[in-house]
Image (cartoon, rainbow, N blue to C red; front, side, top):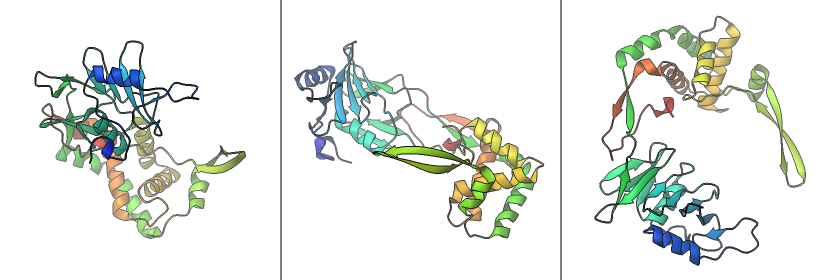
Amino acid sequence: MGWGSSYRNSGIVHIDSYEQALNKFETTKPIRGREVECRPLGHRDRPHFSIQKAEDGSIGCCDYNPAHKTVVFKPAGEVLVSPAWVSTSTAVFIEEVLGIRAKVFDHCVVISLGDKEYRLPKGGLTLKRNDNGAYEAINPAPRVVHRIKRRKSNIVRAKYSEFRDYLTGFIRLRGESRIEEDEYKEVFGVTVQTYTHGNNTHKYERINTPNMDMSNPESVTALVGWMTSDEAMDKYKCALALIKDSSGYYKVKEASVLTLLDKFILAHHKDTVFTEIELEAGNIRKDRYSWAFK
């Protein structure tokens, strides 16, 4: 991954200090004709990269979203790095502004400072120059990954063997052919929504399938409630929801559906089947079970 303006020709040049950031702001003329002031951070024909000054004197560098400052230079010398979203584009933006390595790893933006790597949490990470002039992280939050407790997880899985057998039989009976959209509409119902494009208003139907976010306790509890219900219709709904989330409207793959079922079961019992391992500061490791904790 390249650095600076050579990558994607943004025109952004590294900013090494608050003083440089302030000078960049003061010497950059706003783009004329804008209701809200916009001072481009790089080339003037790329105003989605902008620079702003706050009332406290801090200088913020914005990546696409002018309401969120991805990199903030503070008068005392600290730099707050806080991506609005996780994307390769955001990682490149951080590289271009600060001249440090950045990448996307395990659903998170990660920066490299010397021989250490740090995930950027939702609230951001504060950096400051050390005596050698290199950036170092100030009070980074402890990073944990999760390890599964094999014995306890097997005990938990055994509680859902009845539904697993039902789901396996359901898939084999129906075969690998996709389940048609009309069946989902009949079972879950639809909501008619509208959107406007130009002068035209369009309507479309959204199928009311359940939220399948495994890190959302309410979503997990609702799905597990279906799979443990005595009502045949609830089990049927659960099977359809798992198949759609793992296969979409394409060929049904038994292994993929059963893997998704297993994840929902473990997510429902995550306080029992997982344990946390705290990593040393500056060390990152992929969390195999992060889908249950995001």
